[in-house]
Image: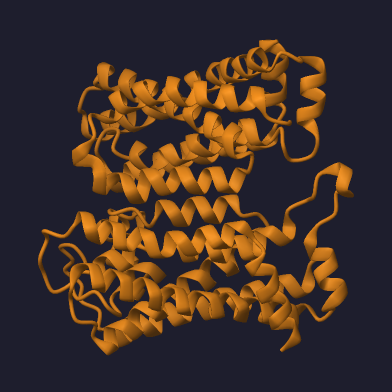
Length: 232
Length: 190
């Protein structure tokens, strides 16, 4: 528990995390404001699907900040060596960090959902709200796990942010093969968005949840295994 | 001066990996989307990374102090850095801009629209220079890349109708951002 508290304190002192929190709330509400005229059953939820940008930054920065080398005149060290000196068990360290990311992502998702739904003035359905929170948290963990594997933030940040654009790359891939519907973002979105733009494959919210859970669990286990074995 | 900046830029492994991945992503996406230069809408992310890296790499470690000791005139140094970046980016963006239409020509037989290729090349080069200017302002690779990608990929599609054509927006915003970056760079501590 102390490790989690330490991780939370590290997160709360990172300027990028505050920026991420701001983005997480401003992006979906802003898009919802611009889209006010568009009606439909997915009003608001569609915006929340694009709004994951903030939690992506959160997940990436939580890890990449550990690997960032200080400038030469302040020793050229990295946060990670200090962190592992304090919490030597690699898996405990990683679990504490992942938990801290979840603890930040969940309230962010609630806030963003409330703000966005306030803007579009739609009633918030409990089941779909759970879907939004789940999708946001999983996306943060996905970014987290990929960054652990790559030890640098730039590639996961670029790939994941490009993929949050309106017509995402994974969506384009569904035109090539229906299998692309089982990418974590394509499947996860079904937890709360009824119809993904002119799709012909229908995935139920439950299957979406299971598919995305499998991706996140798989990547986290892989990240844990790699992180435990390799040099810091 | 430009030669010095150029040698720094080409000796950065990240420059080459970024360009290689951008080209690879563009070629792959061409097969997925299978229309002309539409994949550039995604692979332009690589040029953003390149531009931000070019200026932010000065700030990881103390390269910036060495640079400014050798070239104390800040605005001139910044201009040389951007010129060097343009020298590398122009051919690279031409290759990327050509790759999509060339593949389409080979596969589907549609002729390459040269004017469009030229426009795309200009777009990508200017985008790289803007990214470099943003990199100078923010001095953090991740922050710069995050901000630009957020603007271009998440925000831009929604405010698109209020803006003129992409290339026109860039032609206007590039000099503005370059001047802002130069002013900030000149005034503040390295």
